[in-house]
Image (cartoon, rainbow over all chains, first blue to last red):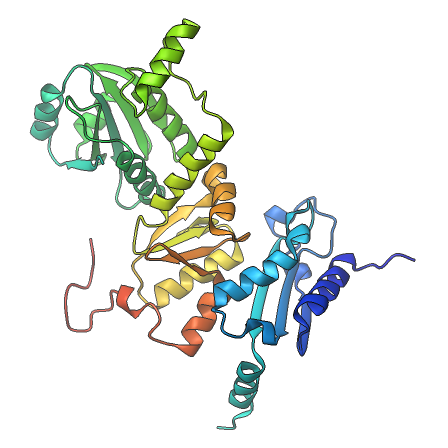
Length: 108
Length: 260
C-alpha cells in the first residue's frame, strides 16, 4: 500500500541520510494555507512544511548556507509541480539546540 | 549609467523637452508618491536607466513627474492612472504603458531605444538587421547571453537599496503570509528598505531563484548579499536585536525622522 505522505517520507529519508540529524521534526502546515488563493486547485496535502533540524553538518555555516544545504537535498520536491510550496527551517548545531532549550526552560 | 531626473514644474518640463536632441528617446514616468506600485516602478526604472550609458548625443533621457502636482502635463498625455510611462522621440509620442507590469515597461523602452541602433553592441545588431532587411534590432541573442543579461540586471536590482526585499505583493498589499510577516518585522524595526513585487515580473521571479540559489520568497538582501527568508530574519533578530539597526530610521535624537 502506498504511503499517504510521500513528500514527508522523502523529506525524512533524505535529511536523515545526508545530515544524520540528532533532532528532526517535520511539521506539515499545509492545512493552515489550504484556503489561500495560490493553493486553489492544488490537491496535495503536503505543500507547506516546517522543519527543525539539529545536525553537526551545520557547524561553521551561516544561516543562508545551512538553508541552502537543506534546499539542495530537497531540490526535486521543491521543483516538482504540486510539490513543496513553502519550507520554513530551523537549523541548529547540537550546542545551539542546547542553548535554546536552556533559554526556553528558564523560569521567570 | 543614466539616472532619472525629477521635473518639478511646467517651465522645467518645457525647457527640458526643447533641449532634447531629435534622436533622443525621452522616457517619462508619471508617479504619485502615495501609490505603492509607483515605488516599485521607480526601482524597476532606475535599474533599467543604469543600463543605458550616457552618450553624446544622449540616446535616452529619463525623467519623472508627479502626476498630481503637474496636472497640466498629465492631462496633456491622458494620464488617468499611475504609474504611467510615456515614450517620446523628436516631439512624437511613440508609446504609453499604463500600470505596473515591469515586463511591459522594459519591453517598450528596449524596443524603442534600440530602434535607432544606439543600444550597446549596436554594430552587430544593425549588421544582422540589414542582412535580414529588417529595420528593427530584435533580441537574436542566444539563450546564454540572455541569461547573462538577466543576471547582470538582477545584480543591479539586489543593490537598488541597502536593504532590498523581494516579496509577493507590495508592503501595503502583501499576497502571502510570509511576505506580510516580513514587512511587519521591517516596519516594527523602522527599517528603510526598497521592495520588489516578484508576482509582477515572472522573469525576475524565476531568474532570482537561480541567481540567488534560493528557491523561495520573500528574500531579504542587505548590501547586495542575501540574508535569507522570514525564518532566518526572525532568528537573526532573536539572537541579535541590533541586526539591521544601521538601516533603521528610528529617531535616536539624531538626524531626521523621515528619510526621503
